[in-house]
Amino acid sequence: MKLNVIQPEKVFKCSQCGTCCSHIRGMMPREDKEFIQKMAYGKLPLVQLVPIEKMSFPLWDWEAKRFKKWQHEVNVDGKIKPSRGILDLNSNKAIIVTYFMDSDACPFLKDKKCSIYYTKRAYICRLYPFNRGPFLDVGSKPKKENMFGTCGAMDPLMPLIPETYDDMVKFLSKAFPDGSFENAIQFDYITEWVNKTIVNLMKQKLLRPAMNYPYEFFLKRFENAEKIDFTDFLEQCSYIDNKEELIKSFDENRDAKIKISEFLEQHS
Ligand code: SF4
Ligand code: SF4
Picture 1 (cartoon, rainbow, N blue to C red):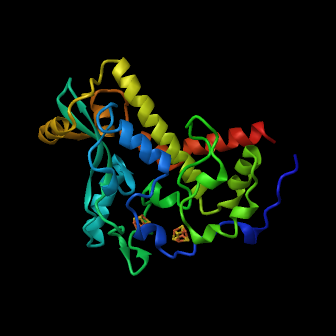
Picture 2 (picture 1 turned 90 degrees about the vertical axis):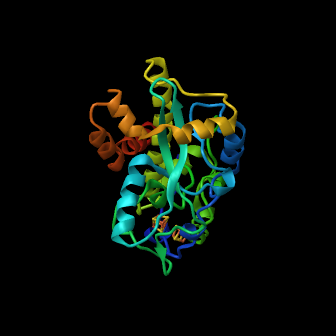
Picture 3 (picture 1 turned 30 degrees about the vertical axis):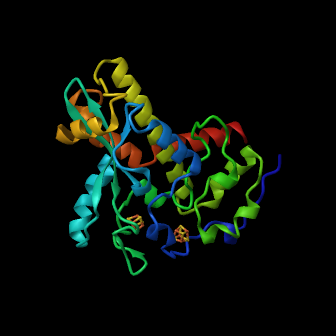
């Protein structure tokens, strides 16, 4: 099938309006909210630590560490708090997997500009206008209508995105020179990697998560337990050898690059 030819002026260009950074609470697809509400308050190993309406952008543990450092450099209180964690009954440790910024607008947004734009920032900052990539396994292939958040700069592009899945992915792979498409795919990859890693840790008996506890009791135990970040825990229990190397491979979007090039090869 002939591919749509994308003119350079038709590629995505962020207008830096700051809208996506000024409303960071609750920006998640409806089906994700429903799933979290139903399953993530104790029925799974990974437990939601805050009410869903308080949730804002998720930061992976290594991203939160960077944000905590940058907040001092730019004199900002990032209001960074744990958002999802696992209580390990083997070690009695509270393992923090993601953090969030407890704020309606991102605290790093000043005069509609990101005060840490020059840094790597977080995936969630760099994947917008996407709210998910096309390869995340959610039971069905995503359609263009449910892959994007609210972003005015997408208005001219939306009608040009093909409806059929294969053509859509080929189009998207060319239409986001800002890297947001690749970042969205890498973010989804990390989400799947975290879930698979938790299952593997349980199989290898390196982790025994508290599940099906009364939620308030769980929270109290989690609060009183010694805290450790997920990637530190992986290194401590020798599941991974080198945390820095793992984070470097994520930062370089190695997995997303492979997924995209495999897809394009298979559908050339
Ligand atoms: S991604 Fe969209 S909503 Fe966010 S700053 Fe750019 S144009 Fe505005
Ligand atoms: S850190 Fe910067 S890019 Fe990320 S949400 Fe905040 S203002 Fe936006």
